[in-house]
Image 1: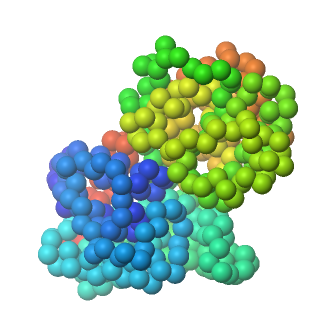
Image 2 (image 1 turned 180 degrees about the vertical axis):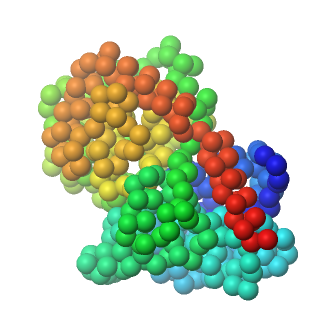
Image 3 (image 1 turned 180 degrees about the horizontal axis):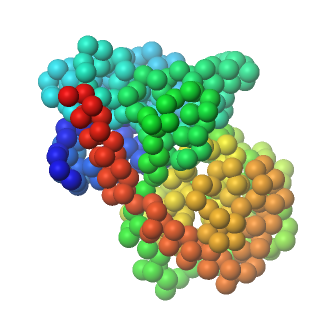
Length: 392
């Protein structure tokens, strides 16, 4: 690295928090700070978890009426909380001589674009996913068709607000270039990373495991996660593997799925456990035989998937949400939305411990070679340098 930059990271979400978007923001910011950059995170009043002392955190004033930690837009978020973040960002842009703004997800991009009016600071947009696949899964009191149309329009228009777009996956990049008409030279791929050493399963190899073969899912239970597909698939698994149990690690309420689980006759085979903190997550994963990603539409790279792979677990996923996973090499893939095929993958790996172990080892090796945060930070650093040089 030849030069250190002062970076304004826009996180229009609770920060930090143990789910996809906040995790990418935190780990990438920490990796940039580790490379010597002066990193400031501008974010909401909410957040839970440790932050490296190398980061400077700036928060909006407390909003007692807004305490939502889950993902997804709300009208209160868009009309009250985000405007406060715009005001905070404008003040800090006047106070500090930032070299670049790195805005995460669409709300972060909107905040940054509004706040930098009158400034010539380069703006990088971090595209975690495409709205056309995510926004329709949230209620917002609008019909599905209208949400779909709005999201497609936003996917086409909003990236043009930035000077450069970084995408979590090649799929997102290709779709933005093809459908949004973005200059290919202004779009790059910067995949997620994972804390490889932290997820080493070796320390837990000799710990006592409870009876039964375990299938695990971790994360929030929002509709887009495909929990209904998971439960239906496990219903098929439970009929064929008599000692199989489904472990769900989450802080979300399971109540919306109670009826389905009971109708499938599997409620007594499901263990709902509190979502573990970052320190305890590797131990929970190490005690699982198979880890499942039942999400259908995911242009991005689910953090849970990388965690599973770094922990050396045998992964079963729909093929539409598992970039980096190769069928029967680094995991088991089922055609998107095919519940019997998802169940077949789980049953196969539960019954073939040797294959499951081999896929887990290969998955961990893939992470070691391709998915570390220092690699992502170095790629962003190169983009910053080019944008800053072009402004001079």
